[in-house]
Image (cartoon, rainbow, N blue to C red; front, side):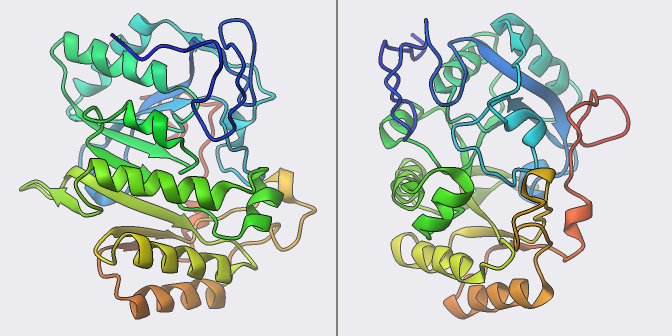
Length: 307
């Protein structure tokens, strides 16, 4: 049976304890499936997208609410979500899988885990077994993650903060460092360790990748995040160290978050990455902010043409 909502929602670290059959918690979502986009996406890490891309399911709303979110068009909880039926979701996924990918990603799923489980089990029932990628902010509840054990092939979490004050200021989540740390340890446990297994074509099939976005004015937060990974997981883990931060209108009056990451800031974090002994993963070019700005008003948020 798919994971069901109870009458006291504790899916994520917010622990709202509302009955989502009748009320809305912090995320503003009920028990239906809030879809912002389901599309073929080729902008993930090379081992995730490969040559054929990944079918990404972008959920609307979010349990974290970062003030600088690049997906602010869909992640803001003040927006009105579009709810899809389970059958419509599954048929759309199948349509994209037929285009040549065998990979399915769930983006910002932490507040809709029962819906994720329902989608995966429906696909399995229909004979579809794509590699499942769980792409989250890292602000996940360990008990909820345990309900996903055996269903997820690749965990792709962010580790955003080790600075509690920064987490509170930017994401209203002072507990983020603790919650995300516990979540990443649980993800690694489910994968049998924090390493990544690739197939003969170089695509990720099992394991985890940790993303970290360097924030302007706060390279020390990034260094603390890398230190935490090295100490609590392993320097063998694949790190995706991102320079793609781009200020949105929501931080236009909040220096230093109203500017790009400087070359000096990013290079200092890259240098520390090497000093710690991390050898697996990716870093970005400093011009990357111009390449990762989706428009969810389009049929395909990442391209000028429909999917």
